Amino acid sequence: MAQDLRGALVGFCNPLLDISAVVGDDLLEQYKLKANDAILASPEHLPLFPTLINSYDAKFLPGGAGQNALRGAQLLLPADSAVFVGAVGDDENAQRLKGAAEKAGLCTNYMVNKDKPTGTCALLITGPNRSMVANLSAAETYQFSHIAEPSNWKLIEQAKVFYITGFFFTVSPETIDAVAKHAHENGKTFAMNISAPFVPQFYKAAVEQTLPYVNILFGNETEAAALAAAFDFGTEDIKVIAKRVADLPRAGDKPRMVVFTQGAQSTVVATSDSDEVRVYAVSPVPSNEIGDTNGAGDAFVAAFLAQHMLGQPTDVCVEAGHWLGAEVVRQIGPNYPEGELKFEASGSFAPSVEKL
Image 1 (spheres, rainbow, N blue to C red):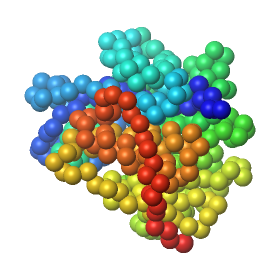
Image 2 (tube, rainbow, N blue to C red):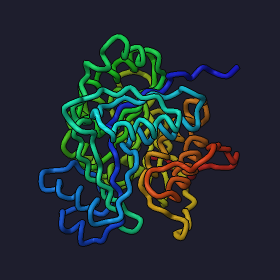
Image 3 (tube, rainbow, N blue to C red):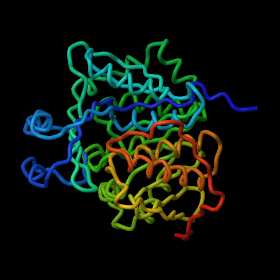
């Protein structure tokens, strides 16, 4: 008998409308941006948003890392499995975001701020790289009091798996703390994403406080390096970093899994209950088939979590992540392919294994 997954996955992040455009390196230099990075907009970045709209072939896409991941997960799960929570404005962009979520079958529970517009994210695409500048606006006003309302807290009580991005440390650490402790106290799974190098760099104390409750931690190679630097690991070896993070103190007996992607290179997985580090090769997408890489990491998380919730082993979860990441790389922006998404494990996908 199939398990009931209605409302089983609840995610928190900043719902943002992406403004995406292919640009030259000169625009990155003008705003002192890095080619493959994610930052929060400062006052000097605000003119960038109208510049993209007025001077480039800008496209508007539903975004926000957490909502992207949950949209993808829902496409691979039974109906009504996933619920996304965040803050939006009372405007047309909020309706665009809600519409994109509904198209994927994703339930949303937005806190609506009537005084601020829905957040936006500038996506500057240069070749295979993307530089993200987020103007959070309404998204940064999310309050724990919203999810704490009894009618909303029922979502937390019903869920089995939680996914919160590191971006949410800048918005509502109180929410992260409450959900993490609920997961721990009730034997549920709490998953997080480092999300951006600035998170461990500038929010180390909050990350350190939350990590004991994290059962699955996602990140990419630059985020892993930033975490290692913040925690003074003294190494740049991503396999060693993954294992060191997996072995950090935990709040209970449940093992921790650390999953670090490296684009087209490989994916590294380490757990607290094994001295083995597993390295999974990636089958690169031919360059002539690449739209852009925006959203590939979110797609990896989407498929990984979906397979994990369906009870599949780690090898299958990673294979699914690679598959959906490759599908999204072939699109323009953080979009999923049209039509039904269906993953089939090969049965022969296996990592190389190293002992540390």
